[in-house]
Length: 113
Length: 109
Image (cartoon, rainbow over all chains, first blue to last red; front, side):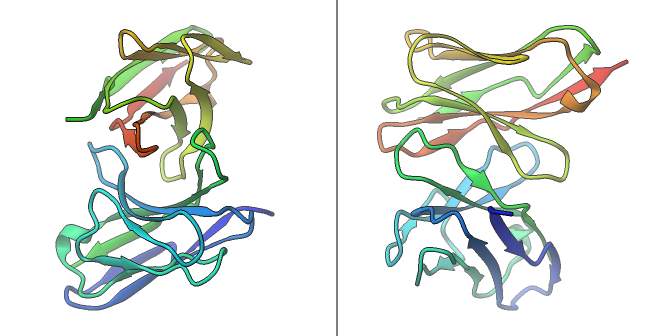
């Protein structure tokens, strides 16, 4: 089934540890995004990539890094996790064009203790 | 600054009609999206409006007034499965999405 796959589904992580959240899509979408979703707040963009080989910073990029080596994969890395990074993380992709809807993965629920 | 306002929670009865409002302030405007998100799941696309007026798609309709910075999502013939959060998102002049916190819709039998 075409779509976006995120892994892991959930994770409990000790503060200070490094963690990579994986995201893979098979729709050949050029644009990919990482969002975090926290209770009472709208989705906040962490990083994005308009095409393979390029990345950009979103609204809340500090403490996170991304890479886009190919079209399909867009991993998100937390170099040294902190409790404020406890959140649900969604990866999304879209076709080209400003009005193209986002397709979301099922999310990763991350708890940093 | 840029922001989106939508009610935190609404309650409606099965079979009825409900209107979820959204007001937005953005630097430029390139359209407004509505997404549905069931608890514990990913958001899924419902509608996109860029011109003034009403877009109808089955039981769901979305309305936009650019001059008022206002949109609403209209859900008719409510079903229990419509219990979900509804997210409003406006696209600014840089094609960045500004998201509301979502409206949790509770459907009662």
